[in-house]
Image 1 (tube, rainbow, N blue to C red):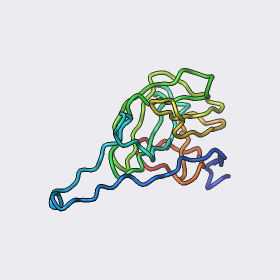
Image 2: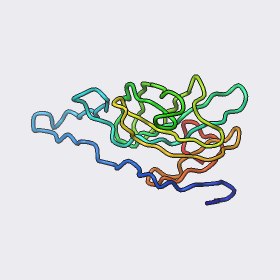
Image 3: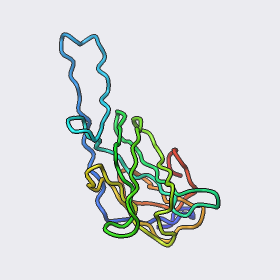
Image 4: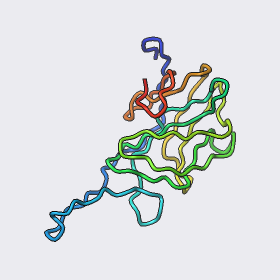
Length: 171
Protein backbone atom coordinates (compact mmCIF):
# COMPACT_ATOMS: atom_id res chain seq x y z
CA UNK A 1 0.00 0.00 0.00
CA UNK A 2 1.06 3.60 -0.34
CA UNK A 3 -0.69 5.97 2.05
CA UNK A 4 0.27 9.64 1.73
CA UNK A 5 3.83 8.84 0.76
CA UNK A 6 4.33 6.12 3.36
CA UNK A 7 5.08 2.69 2.04
CA UNK A 8 3.07 0.04 3.86
CA UNK A 9 2.97 -3.70 3.69
CA UNK A 10 0.31 -6.15 4.80
CA UNK A 11 1.68 -9.28 6.44
CA UNK A 12 -0.28 -12.49 6.61
CA UNK A 13 1.15 -13.72 9.89
CA UNK A 14 -1.49 -13.96 12.62
CA UNK A 15 -1.54 -11.38 15.36
CA UNK A 16 -1.80 -12.46 18.97
CA UNK A 17 -5.34 -12.82 20.21
CA UNK A 18 -6.42 -10.48 22.93
CA UNK A 19 -7.85 -12.00 26.05
CA UNK A 20 -9.34 -9.84 28.73
CA UNK A 21 -7.29 -9.53 31.89
CA UNK A 22 -8.58 -11.35 34.95
CA UNK A 23 -11.01 -9.42 37.08
CA UNK A 24 -11.08 -9.48 40.83
CA UNK A 25 -14.62 -9.32 42.21
CA UNK A 26 -14.74 -7.73 45.63
CA UNK A 27 -16.05 -9.80 48.48
CA UNK A 28 -18.17 -8.22 51.23
CA UNK A 29 -15.11 -8.05 53.50
CA UNK A 30 -13.01 -6.05 51.04
CA UNK A 31 -15.71 -4.14 49.17
CA UNK A 32 -14.47 -0.80 50.51
CA UNK A 33 -10.78 -1.48 49.83
CA UNK A 34 -9.71 -0.93 46.20
CA UNK A 35 -8.21 -4.02 44.60
CA UNK A 36 -4.78 -3.27 43.09
CA UNK A 37 -4.30 -4.12 39.41
CA UNK A 38 -2.13 -7.22 38.93
CA UNK A 39 1.41 -6.93 37.65
CA UNK A 40 1.74 -9.50 34.89
CA UNK A 41 4.95 -11.45 34.87
CA UNK A 42 6.65 -14.46 33.38
CA UNK A 43 7.02 -15.86 36.91
CA UNK A 44 5.05 -19.12 37.33
CA UNK A 45 1.78 -18.63 39.17
CA UNK A 46 1.48 -14.92 38.25
CA UNK A 47 -0.75 -13.45 35.54
CA UNK A 48 0.83 -13.85 32.07
CA UNK A 49 0.79 -10.80 29.80
CA UNK A 50 -1.69 -11.40 27.00
CA UNK A 51 -1.51 -8.27 24.84
CA UNK A 52 2.11 -7.26 24.31
CA UNK A 53 2.86 -6.14 20.76
CA UNK A 54 5.78 -5.14 18.59
CA UNK A 55 4.95 -1.55 17.75
CA UNK A 56 7.97 -0.15 15.93
CA UNK A 57 11.53 -1.06 14.96
CA UNK A 58 14.41 1.24 14.05
CA UNK A 59 16.62 -1.07 11.96
CA UNK A 60 18.77 1.41 10.00
CA UNK A 61 19.83 4.15 12.42
CA UNK A 62 21.58 7.41 11.58
CA UNK A 63 25.20 7.94 12.64
CA UNK A 64 25.71 7.89 16.43
CA UNK A 65 22.33 6.17 16.98
CA UNK A 66 21.52 2.54 17.76
CA UNK A 67 18.83 0.13 16.67
CA UNK A 68 15.82 -0.15 18.94
CA UNK A 69 12.52 -1.99 19.20
CA UNK A 70 9.36 -0.52 20.71
CA UNK A 71 6.78 -2.65 22.50
CA UNK A 72 3.21 -1.75 23.45
CA UNK A 73 1.32 -3.06 26.49
CA UNK A 74 -2.38 -3.20 25.55
CA UNK A 75 -3.43 -4.38 29.01
CA UNK A 76 -5.14 -2.36 31.74
CA UNK A 77 -2.32 -3.33 34.10
CA UNK A 78 1.47 -3.02 34.12
CA UNK A 79 3.48 -5.99 32.95
CA UNK A 80 6.94 -7.13 33.95
CA UNK A 81 8.65 -8.99 31.10
CA UNK A 82 11.51 -10.97 32.60
CA UNK A 83 14.07 -12.62 30.33
CA UNK A 84 12.10 -11.97 27.14
CA UNK A 85 13.96 -11.72 23.83
CA UNK A 86 14.09 -9.70 20.61
CA UNK A 87 15.26 -11.69 17.59
CA UNK A 88 15.42 -11.52 13.84
CA UNK A 89 15.09 -14.64 11.67
CA UNK A 90 14.22 -17.80 13.59
CA UNK A 91 16.95 -20.47 13.57
CA UNK A 92 19.35 -18.07 11.86
CA UNK A 93 20.60 -14.52 11.79
CA UNK A 94 21.95 -13.15 15.05
CA UNK A 95 21.48 -14.48 18.56
CA UNK A 96 18.33 -13.28 20.36
CA UNK A 97 18.84 -10.25 22.62
CA UNK A 98 17.52 -10.85 26.15
CA UNK A 99 15.84 -8.06 28.12
CA UNK A 100 13.72 -7.48 31.22
CA UNK A 101 11.50 -4.44 31.70
CA UNK A 102 8.23 -3.17 33.09
CA UNK A 103 5.68 -1.58 30.75
CA UNK A 104 2.88 0.45 32.34
CA UNK A 105 -0.70 -0.16 31.19
CA UNK A 106 -1.52 1.07 27.68
CA UNK A 107 2.04 2.33 27.23
CA UNK A 108 5.05 2.05 24.94
CA UNK A 109 8.53 1.03 26.06
CA UNK A 110 11.72 0.88 23.98
CA UNK A 111 14.50 -1.69 24.10
CA UNK A 112 17.73 -0.02 22.93
CA UNK A 113 19.99 -2.63 21.35
CA UNK A 114 23.68 -2.49 22.22
CA UNK A 115 24.61 -4.09 18.88
CA UNK A 116 22.90 -4.28 15.51
CA UNK A 117 20.81 -7.35 14.73
CA UNK A 118 18.59 -6.23 11.83
CA UNK A 119 19.39 -6.03 8.12
CA UNK A 120 18.78 -2.77 6.27
CA UNK A 121 17.47 -4.56 3.17
CA UNK A 122 14.75 -6.51 4.98
CA UNK A 123 14.47 -8.84 7.94
CA UNK A 124 12.13 -10.40 10.48
CA UNK A 125 11.43 -8.90 13.90
CA UNK A 126 10.34 -11.40 16.54
CA UNK A 127 9.29 -11.02 20.18
CA UNK A 128 9.83 -14.15 22.28
CA UNK A 129 8.77 -14.73 25.87
CA UNK A 130 11.00 -16.29 28.55
CA UNK A 131 10.05 -19.77 27.30
CA UNK A 132 11.15 -18.81 23.75
CA UNK A 133 7.54 -18.94 22.51
CA UNK A 134 6.71 -16.47 19.75
CA UNK A 135 4.54 -13.63 21.08
CA UNK A 136 4.50 -11.32 18.03
CA UNK A 137 6.41 -10.92 14.77
CA UNK A 138 6.53 -9.14 11.44
CA UNK A 139 8.76 -8.80 8.39
CA UNK A 140 9.91 -5.68 6.60
CA UNK A 141 11.61 -5.01 3.27
CA UNK A 142 14.13 -2.31 2.41
CA UNK A 143 14.12 0.52 4.91
CA UNK A 144 15.52 4.01 4.47
CA UNK A 145 18.30 5.16 6.78
CA UNK A 146 16.85 7.14 9.70
CA UNK A 147 13.31 5.77 9.19
CA UNK A 148 11.51 3.26 11.38
CA UNK A 149 8.97 0.59 10.54
CA UNK A 150 5.80 1.07 12.59
CA UNK A 151 2.58 -0.85 13.05
CA UNK A 152 -0.49 1.02 11.83
CA UNK A 153 -2.88 -0.66 14.29
CA UNK A 154 -2.65 -3.34 16.96
CA UNK A 155 -5.61 -5.06 15.30
CA UNK A 156 -3.75 -5.49 12.00
CA UNK A 157 -0.42 -6.65 10.68
CA UNK A 158 0.19 -3.63 8.48
CA UNK A 159 3.51 -1.85 8.98
CA UNK A 160 4.72 1.37 7.32
CA UNK A 161 7.99 3.18 6.86
CA UNK A 162 7.75 6.32 8.98
CA UNK A 163 9.63 8.95 10.92
CA UNK A 164 10.67 7.39 14.24
CA UNK A 165 8.18 7.93 17.07
CA UNK A 166 10.10 6.39 19.96
CA UNK A 167 7.76 5.74 22.95
CA UNK A 168 4.83 7.53 21.26
CA UNK A 169 1.98 6.43 18.97
CA UNK A 170 3.21 5.62 15.48
CA UNK A 171 2.85 8.27 12.84
